[in-house]
Image (cartoon, rainbow, N blue to C red; front, side, top):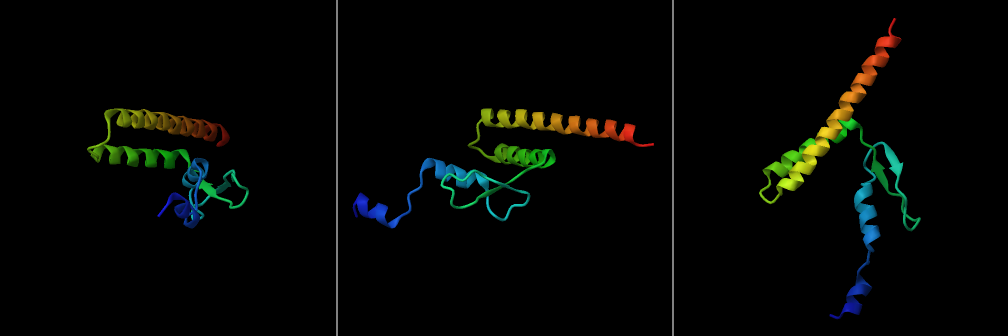
Length: 106
């Protein structure tokens, strides 16, 4: 089988097509936003996460990497730093909410 016949039977995707299909998610997700379509054909959607959801997913990924033998210390450190940033933002948001509710309650 030569290279030309292989290309005739298969759909070929560019790097950009692959990245956009992977990063935008599936139609089954909630809270849809339109992803920019490269070809204007299919509308692909992605899910917008809250800070709390981002924290949960980051912690789950960190737990996974800590169980894996092949993960590097640098990967774990990056995720720990990211988790700290997200935790700080969650706490700041909670403080703002409590201060606002303090002044609005009568």
